[in-house]
Image 1 (cartoon, rainbow, N blue to C red):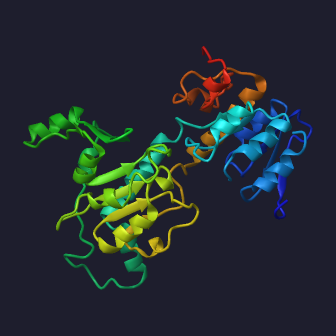
Image 2 (tube, rainbow, N blue to C red; image 1 turned 30 degrees about the horizontal axis):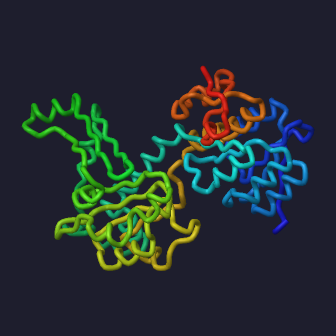
Image 3 (cartoon, rainbow, N blue to C red; image 1 turned 60 degrees about the vertical axis):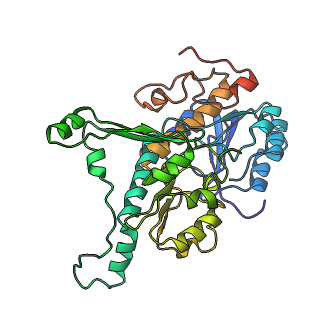
Amino acid sequence: MAKPISIEVWNPSGKYRVISTKPMPGTRWIRLLTDQDCRICTEKKTILSVEDILALIGDRFNRDWGEVLFSALKRAGGSAFSNMAVGYNNVDVGAATKYGIAVGNTPGVLTETTAELAASLSLAAARRIVEADQFMRAGLYDGWLPHLYEMFTLNVCRKSAEGTDCRSYWGRSYRISVCQDDAYGQFLKANGEQPVTWKRAATMEDVLREADVISLHPVLDKTTYHLINKDSLAIMKKSLLQEAILVNASRGPVIDEAALVEHLKVNPMFRVGLDVFEDEPYMKPGLADQKNAIVVPHIASASKWTREGMATLAALNVLGKIKGYPIWANPNNVEPFLDETGPAPAACPSIVNAKQLGLTASKL
């Protein structure tokens, strides 16, 4: 193996071998597998390398998964791989399909948690929270001043009040902002104010020019690689009063990070909040030095309930393939799999190449 590792094994006499390439939170996923005669091997503290995984797979039986690992998995009699994530850009699905390996992912469980983080980054950037915190810790605060860390208002309280549903989506080519006013809209009208409304942008360029906050949530593929680059950064909102705020909680390579660093340097009022990075876990040179950038270590899904739910779904994808279960009809409706008061449905929650492999859809 590439380096000394500390392997933890559950149910060592189990019939089916399951390898977890990194430690996963919670214990339900372990119980679900071991109750079905699975033997689980995982590394206690870190992420297994390709060499480590190959060694654990053996002759019979986070790193990119491609030809080398899937061919080894197939030779060992393996049948399933599951990503503990919604995105699977780190997986060569074509190679997996070539070797008959089902590829699972974990949608439906981390949407709200990711939205919370994106909103948090937007607010922290808009109100310069991190800069103000550092200012205080450095002992620089001498007393209240009218212009101290002055920024613009996002009217978030108005938009997130009870009765208002505010969501943002990136389509294939443009973002749609939706704010349904309902009861709160009537309240605003009664007090002589305009209700919160929405409009559909015709193009991505329109969004970039007009939006105060741009929150990125696309999948990463050839069409979204460097979706935000030097040219798109240049047309974002810029005025004496405010500049745009850019948030990315999707995948790092959606943004040309080197171009972003240069834009931050010459536009000090521009703000960015990043949960992901182009060469993760590393940042492009200069990014960490920019005070107008907030950077966090890929924590959009980091709530206890969400992460344990992701681990459960990943385990059930593998278990379902081992047991020959059909594929769950609606992968975004995963609540039945997360309900601990009863048994999980006899189905794989989400297999992204199910159609290519000819796997049967569940009627549950």
